[in-house]
Image (cartoon, rainbow, N blue to C red):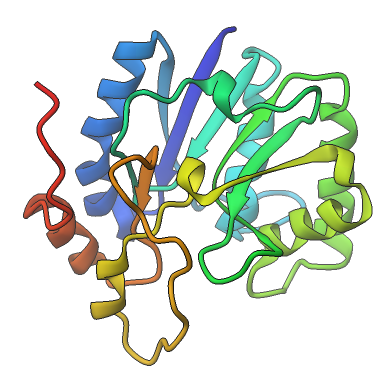
Length: 219
């Protein structure tokens, strides 16, 4: 299975991306996957400069060349190299994503995998149509779009447990201001990645640079 790990950021997130690239590079080297880093923030003909949509569209674009494309947000870094891209797939569903960190009914689109199945073209067309007509200015845009598809067309979306693509560390609660929601099933050392979502950029970098998650060295 020819596989790509795709990641990127806008300019303001470059320092966070730089901090997470080493784990992504190491993972790709170990698994024999390609790694591509893209710059976000251009004007899409349909979605404009809405970067949350842009990263999904860019991932779809790569599926023609690859059998599987994994998007990883700039603030996600890999903490367990034992997972393989095949572990995220279920039958012929073209997209896999994990449950959100706050509830058990919706999925998070910070990290996801798109597979080249016979349904992927239909998923892309549905994503563009719904995203541009129903959720273009929704605060969660692409996440709302995919969750709508999950509800209306569940054979398109594979829902994974949080330990696959949305391990949010408990320590993040200390860095959040005005956020009272509890992290459900926080990150642990068995999770594929740590997703440092919804905190200040400098705090994300601090957690990685100072190894506040106490991740053991792999070598």
